[in-house]
Length: 467
Image 1 (cartoon, rainbow, N blue to C red):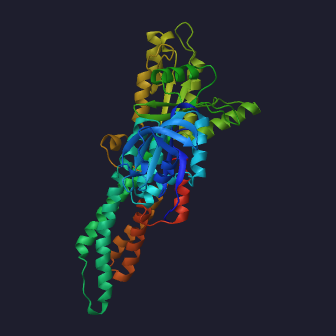
Image 2 (spheres, rainbow, N blue to C red):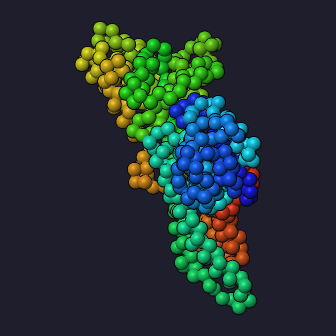
């Protein structure tokens, strides 16, 4: 897959803005750019040095479309590895379209989704996992996901995989050499060293595979189900959290019942709060449907926040409310014994000291707070963060966030474990070489040393146009 044509696309978000950037890449990028650009100093764009910026006008014949800045990158010293021109124009959608249509008439074609990054991969500027990290970086909306994407784009994950693949490839070559001298019964690959290498590769693969559990939730946000009856203070609690972090992202309407999802960032980690119905016993058909939906949301969530219906009156809480809380907690824990559960009692400011002691004694795991007065909210945030293993993130270790990489690592581990079994069982070299090749193949699919058009199409289809 080597492209010989020149592509063009808007590299900035569509719509009005202060400026917009139109990107051209390909063998004819400079000549096409020069054909529509008139420098204020009369310079010929085709004769200018790479990595230079030029002021002038985009001309459609005698008609001036806009005053622009043109940035020139000559291949291979560009993002794509090809000649690249970036035209910074005024951000009017009309001007953007006029310039793009002019460039199309001059011989460029519209770029497909992710085609600039695809060309960067094909021209050896990025490997495949680094190219995928570009999309993750663009979509990152918190510190943790940004940190992981940057580490992967810099080649942290690629380097780790490439090193393992290279060491395995060296031994694979020696195994293949043994096959050439099979009749002479010689052994070129030291089995002790080979066994040590395979054990080390297995350890690294298991660590990377385990990191996906953390990486996946950091990349996509940690779903938190908020369970509680109407008017127990869920909205007040959410507002206290959101106003503190000022990180409200979206409100998404559900289908079976209205479910509000609020996203916020706590300590650099994204959390998605899902508001649900209550879970009390009921004979009402409609309410039962809502409760069923609640348990479905709790199943999908990674953490459950139970906002208890403790409504203080005169500094005390009714005994029946306390008993209801105990029943609800038991029901949740029976249904989801391994799922983290945070029990919250709101309106602490209305409770007497005696009642606070009583509640904390009868419901030992309860977290009492006042969402209205923002009391105890920080403790809740710290509790939520405690459910996320951020040790690997703090230590800047490689964390896998891509499900395609995860799948390839699983398959590579299976192949390596077969090689390990073969070494322990003195399996013939020709049989072991098949499993070694399988592991090498899976390593190669991660970095793009082994690929096909269908795989590339699936990956880059998720990119935005212009990147």
